[in-house]
Length: 219
Image (tube, rainbow, N blue to C red; front, top):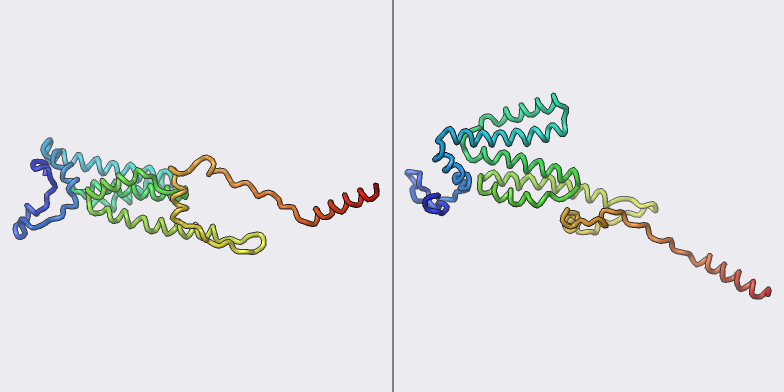
């Protein structure tokens, strides 16, 4: 691909299906691995994928340290990394593991703040989709977080007023989530709405008018 300046469209490696149409889902990983191999061979590739494991460790460790006590997050980190040691190979999926961890952490942060995920995750997903086919897992992770946000939004809107009347959930949830995005939030939107002004009834007005009319007759 580096020599021909195009993505491989046919299988050049297999003996039985040589030249058959081929969808290369990991072309970007191969583009990154090829110059590293040319520069330093297997040692350079081991270093490259070691950096990927280091990035994964840093992302998981930072998030666990934010939520757990030192001993607890250290044990959890060791167990989490131990579960992935079987896949510590010089293959494209290892480059996608740090992105998977980053994606999941950012979705969790967005739910905790009840906000939309940051827009910079879009180019991250684009890179992930061209590194490895596991990007589909990242798309599937959106569903449970979105479902939780929808259920929480519905529960907040379906509440009972002082008179016992139920407020109907009529707002468009999708538009509400868009308006809650940081790019569309203004300082005014963060302030609570002022209470409505009191509405005067007709009875005090009638009394005041009657009192004024009586005073004019007395004079």
